[in-house]
Amino acid sequence: MAARKQPAPLPAPALLEWAMGGLGLLLVLAALAVIVIDAFGETAPARLEPRLLEVRPAGTVWLAEVEVRNRGGQTAAAVEVEGRVGDRTAGATLDYVPAHGQGTVTLAFPTDPRGTVALSVPGWTRP
Image (cartoon, rainbow, N blue to C red; front, side, top):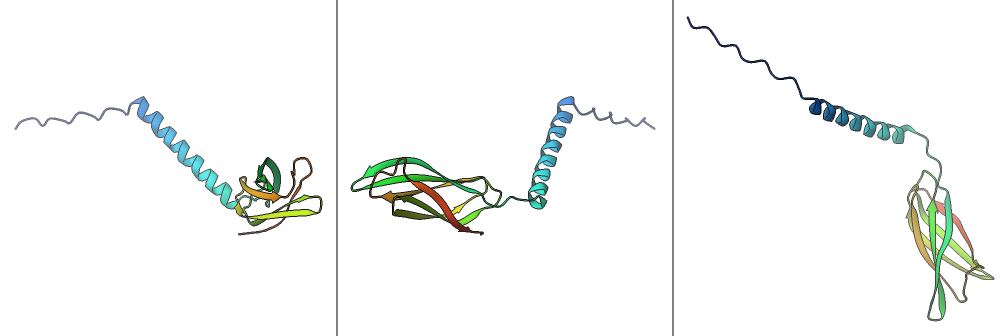
């Protein structure tokens, strides 16, 4: 009877394969940690801050571009933005401002609002 040939042992995985496997494992664990922290962690309420970006004339009115930043951890919806110059008030509404994001509105005034406009965010809803 002829001797049976034994199969050769499989080669050990290369160092690069182990390194890439470890890197993949780290990425998966990091993604899972972010998801778990976001799902179970506490979120700060919306904290909206308006800021005047630009003022430009447009015919008989002045347009003031206002950025609203949300420094909180919750999204704000139906965000009301108000600007006052003297006894004149201009307002606009943003659909939403995401957590740690921003939105922009344009307010119209009959006079140049630079240096005299008082900006506020009087209210919003929670989506």
